[in-house]
Length: 189
Length: 200
Image 1 (cartoon, chains in turn orange, purple):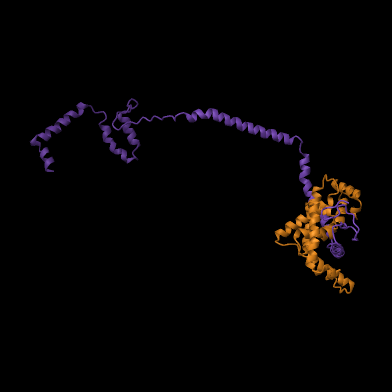
Image 2 (cartoon, each protein chain N blue to C red; image 1 turned 135 degrees about the vertical axis):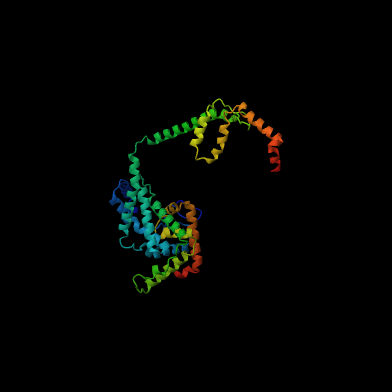
């Protein structure tokens, strides 16, 4: 389901959730759960922790959704809770977000041995996201929210509770910094 | 198009190819930035499509429903209470405050003079040793005192007072003759009493 394409439908579904409709709530989880999980997993590289925080996030949302009125803020609200939970948990564990490793792009799970263009794509992904892992935490968050969660800059600003101009400037600098880390990105493309 | 100082589009309209759903960049970026951004989008597909663990949706759903039920329990209880409860609580709190204030005021008004007044002097009438005691209340006869002594036989220390009881009812005339005899005996060498005293 793609609520993003139908804001009115999302609004109606959230209203049903507020009225206690469990099926409507399940629709929300099915729509946003995988995205929240993917973002969390890309940041912490720990499936168990990602599920735990995702679960905690949806528990928090459902207990506060009574009387909620959708004004286009649900998605930033949801991801903001998730990101804050992850940040708190990482601080508690004394860890930082783990850069995306070759496990993501190397086909370890399937054991496949890709070749040719597919392997080049995986090498490129590993190099790019490895460089992103060297950025400041806030810059990494912007790039993850943009490319993994597919959020707009405005939504990213709402998730991170920062002015839109700050987010845009940080993103601009983050790309320049990635280019510096990669050295000669022209060759990669 | 609304642009910031970097020339980045805020309206989301742009012309570069991106995977569906990712906002295109504005005009403040050069070609290399755009290629890099496009590559990040294309390579993040594997990150976006990270498969959720089996049963993930069910577990999240059940946990969140349970959390909601737990959160609603105190809410329903609160809703069941009379609406006037907050006002009643305020009135009770106000009454308690007034009561404490009145009590404090009464304590200050009534307690202050008492606290400032000099401490009352407790007069203790101490009888000096040897001074005469009021004997009006003592009407016991010697027989009664004997009876009292007899009743206090267990207190051996009181027995030595028995000789004093004998002298209680004596008059001066009862003893002057004996005293004169003793004095005569002392001064009469024939009775040897004086010498006997000195010889001892």
